[in-house]
Amino acid sequence: MNALIRGLRIGWRSIQLNWVPALILQLLMVIFGFSYQAEIPWTMTIFKFLAEAKESGGAFFSFIVGAVAAGIISEIFRVYCVDGGKWRREHLIDMLFKVLLMGGVSVMTDYFYRFQNDYFGSGTDWNTLHKKVFVDMCFYSLFITVPMNSLLFLWKEEGFSLKKTVALVFPMSSFLANRFLPLWVSNICFWLPIVYVIYSMPPLLQMPFNLIAVTIWGILIVTISKESRH
Image 1: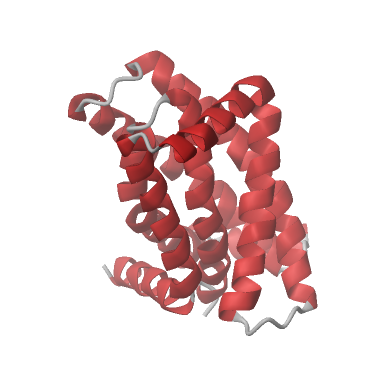
Image 2: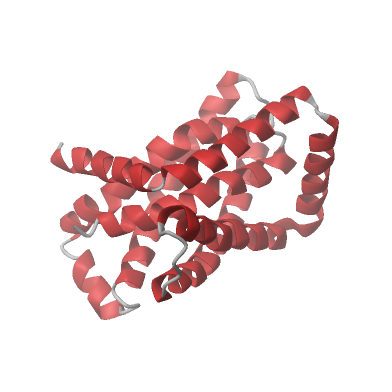
């Protein structure tokens, strides 16, 4: 129970520190969602372009836009909305690290969304949405993305030293309580409502909508990782 409370505290702390960029990007996502449902002409042109780019670019499109959104744009928001516009060496390191990591995760997520659509179909009824969200939260996030992000961010914070990282992973109970659980709890609180929106979109628009959310997550995950050290 103490570990759960700590995870919630860290997640809430990350939102408090980054609420300005998070609010801007969430409003943007809501606007895009309503614009799509209302079929506003100029926004439909944007959605058509994104869908065509996704269809022709495939995994390469997912890597590039994931790297730009979660790596570059998220760090720019973090610097100018959170850190007073002052660039430091750590910002550049975090940016490069997230470009590589989040670009790769975006490719993984692209294939995962394809699997979900192939297995459950592309319907937007509540039964289909619940199934996709359950698999996303309880399997993909729990066993793949959250453990991977926990380990890799720990590795970065330890100066990319494998020896120091392994020393902090064991005993495993300590790593799970101090690193994995806070990130997993924060992941659920942030992504649970958002994935419902994403899975309600047509398959070719799911990744473009995911990229708005992953820009916010690219800001929050740095703070969550650093707060987990205390």
